[in-house]
Structures are given as C-alpha cells and as structure tokens.
Image (tube, rainbow, N blue to C red):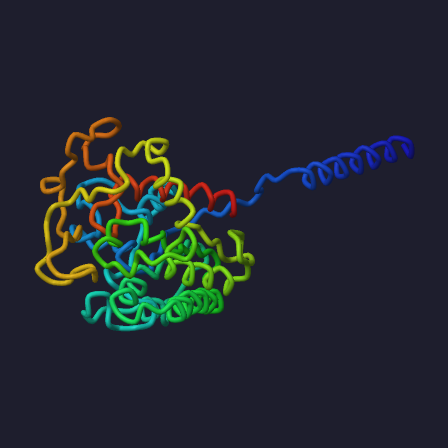
Length: 312
C-alpha cells in the first residue's frame, strides 16, 4: 500500500514538473484575449461615419479599425471624427470638431473592450498650415501619450495606439509644402511627433508598453509599402485615386482639393492599374492626398490584428 502510494505521488510530481518546464520554455498564450467589441477614438484615419469615411466609400470593409473588428468577429463602435485634433476643438481646416481628448473623456470602458486610438494627422496638417513648429509637433505626440496613459488609469485594459505615417511621403506634401520639410529621410514634423509619442509611452523603439498598451507603428509599415508597393500588391503609392474636389478646406490642405469623404466607387478611378485587384482603385495606396484606399486600410488592419493576437 505504502509503495503504491509513493509511486502515485512521484508520478504526479513528475507530471507537474514536466508541465512547469514546458510552460517556461513555450511562448504560447494560454489565456488569449478575445474582445467583446472594438472601441475607436481618433481623427479622419479612423472615422467610421457611414458613407462619409475618409477613403473610397464602397461597400467593403474599408477602414483599419473595422478590419480589426472583422478579424476578431466582433462589433465596432467609433467616436473618431474627421479632422479631429488631440486637444484643440478647432480641427484641420478650421472647422469646430470634437477633439480626441473630448471623445475619450468620461468614457466607461468594459473589461473586454479592445480600444483602438489614432491621432496626429490633423494636428500635423494644421501645424504645417500654420507655425510649422517641430516643438509644437513634439508636444502633440507627448499629449497623445498622456491621453493614452489617462485611458489606462480610467480602466482601459487593452489599447492599440497608432502613430502617423510620414506625411512628407504623401501627395499632400506637394500641396502643403511645409509637410515636405525633412529631418534626415523623414518629415520633420513626423519625426518630432512620433518620437515624442514613443518616448512618452516608455520606449524610443517599437515595443509593448506595460500590460495594457500596444504601440502599432504605422510609419514603419507605410514606409515598407511606399518603398516597394508591388510587394504588398499595390501598383501605385503616389497617385490619388479619388476625383471629387471639395470647395472648402475639407481635409486641411487647402480649398479645391480632392476629399475622399465624398469619394465613392463610382467616382474613384483606377486608370490602367488592374494588375492585382478589382476594383482598380484598390491598386493605389492613396484615396486623397492624405488618406488611403480601402485596400491599404485592410492591409494595415490585418497587420495590426496579427500584432495584437501576438501581444494578448
């Protein structure tokens, strides 16, 4: 009896030890996070207003945040507003709009929310149209970092925060020429903003930020696509595919410019670029001079989803 009991104890101990060794040597996530919904804050890059999104307004999943939600198989709710700035209630283009800070203030997070936030496009466009100060641009990056920290303090447990792609490499830089000012190979305003954001969140390089935040590097991803678009199934990373112009200053780069908020499949052109994708406009990166096509949004959203399931 004693011998049999000792045998069972030793067998159980060996099983526990083997399990512990296996768990220490594995990177498997044993309790993966599955959100119950995706909650979105931000500017025009994340605006999900029906039929008025800053891309080609077709019937597809045409925004990175909705692509993330679709990948998880959950609903998405967006408070993002086109031209919204981080703190200033006057958006790019000079029109009053709910700031990203105001979108976030007082929000009641649920434990299984995935919170997606972007900001900076409108702040940097407004800055380029005005003082063009890298000091100001850095302050916006710091402000976004502080806002993300406040969201964690308010109960957000899973936050994906996106920086801004390099606007000096977009068609907008030829229109709003201050965007073309460089710091090395990067736009000076983008360097100031993105680097201040990363530093505020705790690292000068892309990394996980604490237990609650994942910084997703849109600038790095965009640079890959811009450098070799064909690798990512794009034909053209320069041409604007939408054709509808805005009598006002709709996206902040001046009057009479193409504004993808009014762009549909019927008034987006693909030219002869039918190498990869139908409809043809999805062979292009840019819907208007600032904001991307549905194809780019989906590709970026899928990339972010991969980062998030690896993180949580």
